[in-house]
Length: 88
Image (cartoon, rainbow, N blue to C red):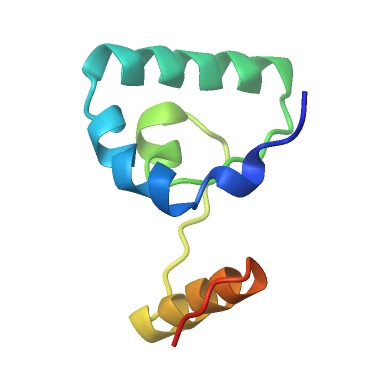
């Protein structure tokens, strides 16, 4: 199988993420899958808005990072440029 991690922030995926995440049964299933993966890989590092509050509320260590919106916008623009997109 070919890696598809480059797709996570593509426009077509980003456009449907909220709708998919709103499917309660699917979300519960995916949370459980993430918890199973963590049980199999105790040194797992995960990233996401709900990882510390929903998926792994009992995690021994949690880091919450915050960045100024202009820093975040610049970082995202750089990511898109690397992928070949024309952004200002």
